[in-house]
Length: 524
Image 1 (cartoon, helix red, strand yellow):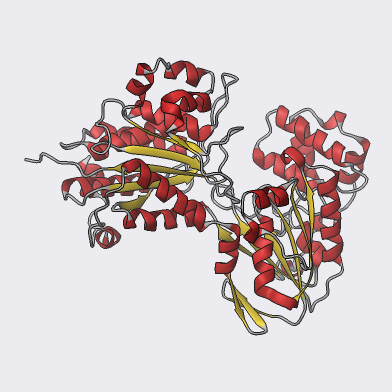
Image 2 (tube, rainbow, N blue to C red):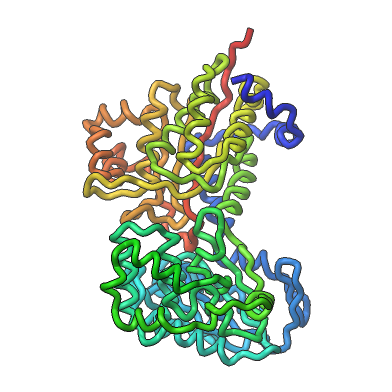
């Protein structure tokens, strides 16, 4: 292990991190974990991220270092689950410079926000923004298509003197369905469902969606020419790839008919295509043409990610320090099977909690897991170095933070989600370690407040999970096989381990947290 870590010493950043010990806190580990998660969610509230990204100066506005003149020339469109709150804040900032707007939001969202006391995320009565609710059950429908048509119409009427503010968040793709005529919405859905059922990758699915859509893949920006387009994006995708978030309506993409045909042929769907799809794929599209001058479709567009998992983890780290922990962020891109992810956190916990020099086998296995969970070797080595120095130099309690979106292999029909199942599996990995406050605590929670079809966002666990369940007659392995993590945590100790933040109004994937208490060490 020393051989692995010695490659990264000394590191100036770590010296800064260790510059002062975090303050002592009397809260329980469980309570502090919930506090840190709440800070992560608060950091990416839709109104907060918009307010922090727009600087208004009299008759101009500065966004990401770019200055734009306001002269009653601002138009606004948006689509996504968090867009209503984003639009409300944008209108408040822009004032009467906003001419008009259209946003496409989930069915029932206005009533839901009102019922949960989130009135500050609603538009004012005299708002110039039209709200259209659609996409029931997160699926494109006629209402969402109507909204897309109105958004396209608004964009098409703009001139070079206009500024179009585009607000995008997770769920935006389903809320902006605009199939290229004569393709119907149902025909487009049928093609993408057939591809998904045949095993197509997310990249291939997005390629097909863009090819059959008027607005995706840069289509919205295309129709908004020659106006200046500024897109503010709340990302729910690992790595924040602009072309994948809501299928990239403001991001130029090259869509070639040959590429589409190869994908369809590969999955043996070419001969079963509707006539309308064949017609569109066989016709030239303005966005398919080669154009040596890129400025006509990309130079007038500014895309800015204003909220992401990284932003949430950064603010979570600040709150962790306030609560007495020394924070370290592993990665905002953890993915892969929850079995591998839980093993990773279990190994890091054992490494950090070891009272003696950790066996080198732990570091070796951690590094082998890297490719399986989407974490670079450098990040794993950096994290182990911090944990090792904190352990040997007595820096006190540590808060390991990460984020992303692992996957669960479905083998049963129970209720639950990836966060609750991850917490269960990590609990088993922590077995035999000391219990809090002398042992580690793990939390996994979805920032959207909903983990699978349940009211919980996730759960909190520790090394006592197995024995606690056994004492209450609950067989963890049976619940895992049935993917029934929510039922398990609901029955265990009256649901005290569940994480239930309620309506969060945002989504930047998941937050993972491993709290490590101060460890007494024995070093010769």
